[in-house]
Each structure stands twice: as structure tokens, then as C-alpha cells.
Image (cartoon, rainbow over all chains, first blue to last red; front, side, top):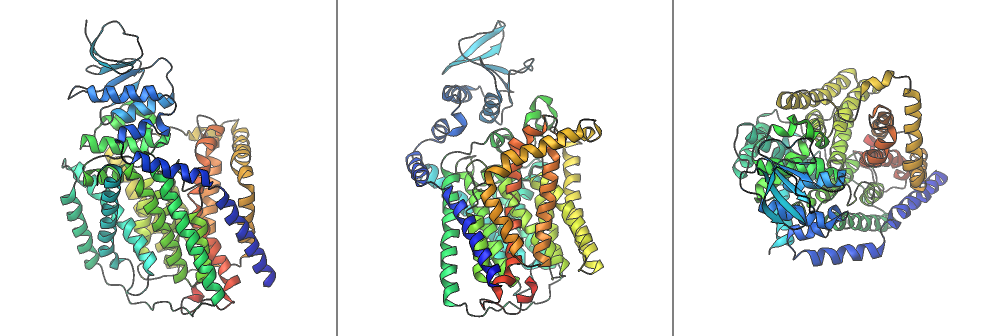
Length: 141
Length: 458
């Protein structure tokens, strides 16, 4: 029984050590500083500085800017970016919710707006609002 | 108080209130004097979360905007229903012998580690707004749409272009997120991260309380809670906002109530029904877990046949009802990531092998020291039917998770890399409870604990 208990204590000590070493003091301090600093900032600014926008912070700025300029009753938003990826798609969908938003749909559904990230202005669309890093467009000449 | 602090406090108050609502309904779940405070608190919290899910689903279904009135009304109905159910017979509270001084030191150290683990997770969760890709595309997105639209928008499930949001997934977590947002009046995806640390604390309380009720020595119960609290693969910034942390809580509720039901404890079947419904509402893995519990219950050799059959039905029926409700609401939606036809494909053995090899390379080998220590603990413990059942449940689910990548349409490697580690990590509470029960008899003879409940651990 003593041997069994010894094995258990040794294994449990190793397990606790393995679990504890994953917590680096530098990371804890960094997180604490970030919470304290971010607590006073607006939610959108906290997301802008966070991990979900890290792949392209200008893109998040564009999305948030476009979201704030969406006309009331907008039925949906198609988003066009130079280099689409899943990260661009997920952030666009989330940021515009509850308004449906899709990245580069094969065809833009009727009544939806087009948010273009970058200088491109597709034909058949007119600019209804200039937003940071792009424009918000509606169908029309 | 404004900004993050204000919303964190508001959500904390809502979660406390939801636990209080669950507490008033919980006498129907436990015989008087049967549950430890920790266990009762954890059940109260989870029942409260089910009330939030229910109030949002019901209000949206009848085109009302969910809010305090709907929540209080449903809570009142739940309390009334709990009073109308037949009262449970009184059970003797487990008594414990005074612990030895060495055990007190151990307990204090483990308690400190458990508290440190909970605080560290709180820190990880609240560092920034929830950010995991699955939170943005699936769980958080659905919650935000439900809250923002104030209805059940059909396009969420019907537009094929939104397939990436997995419309086929259960809606329990989005309902909770939307419910909290309806109650505070805004969708704060940073402060809302408090839900997961609260669930962690609930899980730790349940683990501690349930193990103590089954006569596990205090030091072993607290040691298991401390190890679980520090388990970063589950309680990480990345998993916060996804369904894995909530599911891990409900899996422990499910496993422990299965064990209690097989022991024919008063109220255990009611708990099993709630836990199975809660797990199935959160994730498809919860549905699998309910089916696994039913199978395990039927195979539980030492329990009486009627108890086994009742436990199997109590696990399966609510899960099937949850599945039926989803079907009625959204219709039959195919699983986007899986194709059962791959099972009979000629390349199935190769896919299966590739999945297992990827699991070994990317999930097992990097975690080898911890897994070896865990394996040693399980091996060094002694047979305990209750603990072995929980470990068997975790083992069955790991085996299913390991086999599923071979049916993934995006390839076995993709599923292993994106999901295996975190879905398997959600089984940690079950593994901790099962292992602690096996270790109980190893440390029990040191005279730390006993009482009327001691024999239940064996």
C-alpha cells in the first residue's frame, strides 16, 4: 500500500508541475496589464487591439467603420476584400451581425449593400458612404 | 462604474441570480441533506442556465422579446413544478472524521492551487473580447444574431452560404449568450466571457461536493479539483466562448448523475434527465455522451436491471427530445463536416490510420508527460465501480472522437488539428472524478475521512 501511495504521490506531483509550468509569470503580468489598460476603452477598441483582429487590424477598422455607417434597415452586406480567407469571412459575419454578411458571395442578393475593402469600386455600384479603408456601396448607376 | 467593469459586475449578478433561481427549483433534485453545498451550488447554476435557455427559446418562439419578465415567469414555473413533484425521501448527510494535521496542510495547499487555477482562468478569459474563430463564426455569431434580431431569423438556417456557421449545431450556448445579452440589454462579448470561469467554478464545486458525498477523502477530492482547475487545455483563452467549457460541466453532471442513478439514489433520475438535456443542447458531442451513458447504464453489471433500464431511458429520452425540438424548429440539417458514406469507402482504413497517427503526433506526444502521470494515477488506483464507470464514459467518448476524423469530409488531419484536443479536454472533469474515486481507497486508510458515505466510493 505504501508503494502504491508513493507512486500516486509522485505521479500527482508530476501532473501538477506539468499543469503549473504552462502559466508563465510574464504572461500573467501581460494579461493583467492588458485588462487594466483596456477596461477604460470602448469595446470595439478592445477588439481592434485583440487577437481576432490581429491578422489585419485595418480590416477590422474598416468593418467597424462600415457597420456604424450602415443605413437603418439594411438587409445584408456583401464584403469584398483583396485576399479573402476564412479569417476575413468570420470577422465580417460576426461584426455585422445581426445583419447577414457574406464574404465574396458568388452573387450579391437583392437589396444587399456592398462593402469594399480597398480602392476598388465595381461597376454597377454607387458609393453611399466612404468608410475607413474602403467604401459602402449600393446597387445603381 | 462603466465599461468592462460595469458589465462584468452586471453579468456576475445575472449569473448569481440565475443560480439562485436554479437553487429554488433544486429541492426536486436532491433528497434533504443528501447533497453537499458545492454539489447543490453547481446544480443550481446549471439549472439556472437551462432556465435562461428555455426562456429565450420560448419567448422567441412566440415572437416576444426575451427579458426579465420571461426569465422570472419561467423560473416561477420551474419552482412550482419542483414543488409539485413528489418529495424525495430524506437521506442521511455523510459525516466525516476530523482530518489529520498533515491532511489539513495538504488540503490548504490544494485549496490554494484550486483558487489559483480559477483566478488564472478568469484572467485568461477576461484579457480581451472572445476571439476564437469558432466563437466568431458559430457560437458568438448565433448569439449576437438572436439578440440583435430579437427573433429566430430563418436565414440563419436556410441560406446555404451561411453553412460555415454550422446551422446543424445545437443552439444551447447561443441561447445562453443571447439570454444574458437580453438581460443586461447589450451584447458585450468581452464581459460575457465571465460565463466560462463561472462554469469552471461550478464544475470544481460539483467535483468536490460529489466526491465528498461519495466518501472520497478531502485531500483527494481537493487534489482532483486543484488539478482540474489548473488544466489549461480546457480552461484557456482560446476555448472561452466556445461550447467546450459548458459541455465539460454538463458531462460531469451527466456522468455523476448516471452513477447516482445506477446506485438508485433518490432524485438521481431527475438529475440525469436535466443533465442529458443540457448536454444535448450544447453540442452534438453531448448527444453522443447521452447515448454513451445509456449504453453504459445498460451494461453496468453490478446494478439492478430496473435501475439500469431507468437510467438508460432517463439519458436517452431528453437527448432525443432535444434533437426532436431542433428538427421541428430548423428541419433536418445535414452534418457539414462529416459523411457517413466514407465508412464504406475503400480508403477508410487509410483515413482511420491517418487520423490516429495525427492524434498521436499532434495531441498525445506533446502532452506525453502529463498523460503518462495521469495514466499512472489511474493504474495505481484501486477498482471502484463508480469511478470506473466515469472513466469508461470518458474512454468511450475519446474513442468516438478518435474515430470521427476518418469520416471528416475535409480530411482526418483537419479535424484532429482543429477539434480533437479541445473536445477531448472537455472530458477532464469526468477523468478527474473517476481517478479520484479509484484513488480513494488508496488514501482512505490513512484515516482522513469516512462516515456513512465512505462505502459509496468503493
